[in-house]
Length: 119
Image (tube, rainbow, N blue to C red; front, top):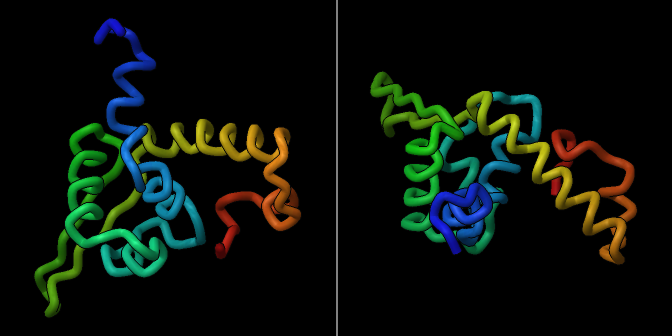
């Protein structure tokens, strides 16, 4: 496939395991900023190394912002979606709609906005 193809370029990083779920976790809830530990707790099975790698890659793609506060111990590291990351949530919602349409029944998801989901 041609590397100039947008689908090729986007899937080269979005297609990596955990990337979509990290973006979705950052979108969920009322808090705009989430700590590394909060993300780790909400993504059972992800290793610290993979979470760090995915966060770094998403930052380099301008999908999320990062702020660090050294005023506390341990150091407080927080992440939030950028406008680019927020816009990509539309794609994730499209995946949800497709899954619901084609047989992945989930009454909870059918009746809830992803931002309000606690799953």
